Image (tube, rainbow, N blue to C red; front, side, top):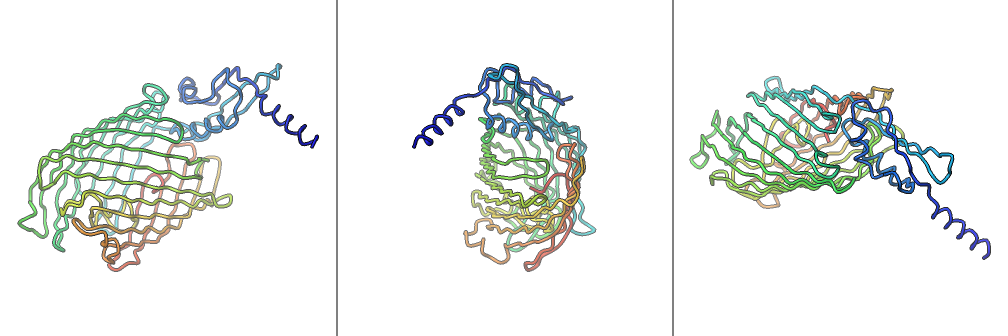
Length: 418
């Protein structure tokens, strides 16, 4: 009993004693402003040393586009009651040209190219320009400053003109339309802490459908232009830990939108989607990655339904917008294995299975079990990763469908698929 009591007192003494931080230093950063890095930290001078808080700060820094890796060191001073904390930052190159292209046959090729700056002014500001060719030309400009006012509040702005050839499905027929969406958007972002982030935004946009070819019907207009207004709410719970290309943990990303329309041909609707991510380290070089996407919208019997089955969005190898629905459930799971891991370069291979089903416009929930709506696409891919350039993951995937009427095809892009 005496030994137990002595141990409790000693433990209490260790628990109560903590060195006081009298200096915080940031090293190795060149582009990213030291004042900006310090503004993101929970750790402050005058506080007692807290290793859990330091670990949260390191994870916060690793999520920044301008940071490829971060760590901390604690230096004791002559007076053992005080210490100095040093944060080391290995920076990314953040001015990055990018391209995405994807195809399922020789006649179908789409691509997007542009340039992004993810750390403008050394303060985590993102600016991007892009040009897209998906049969027609598209353009876009994006501005994102998540810490414009302080480490909690920021803004986002964008202007897009997107034009594509889109299939419209009705009465077991299909027609091809030229589709244009011109939009101007703004948002306010709030980050409560490392794990919780929210965004409220609005958008003014117009949708323009012009008939090209295919089936026609009296109830489906061949020319349609509608002005719309959108409000959205995004809530992001992110508890993923980052270590270079390896991820470990859980994330839930919820997106709710209401779209007000001026024409009943494209009626007003509500749409929500939740992406659940789960990542697990497997041994020293493996990573198991999963995304479950569940989404529902107002169940209008309209050929212009909001959820699309598409190569570049949800199912690799399926084709470019091959179907639409008013609800979707999609599971993407893959195993990534690092075969080469050098100071700046990583080569990964991956095996994946993408599977999903959709509710037809105006249809019942039982549509999810309809064989015609089910898509299952296993496949393999490669990843070429530059560890010193933000988001420089060149991906090549090849998916092969195993459900009736399936296709196969390559999907190329920058960044992990999810």
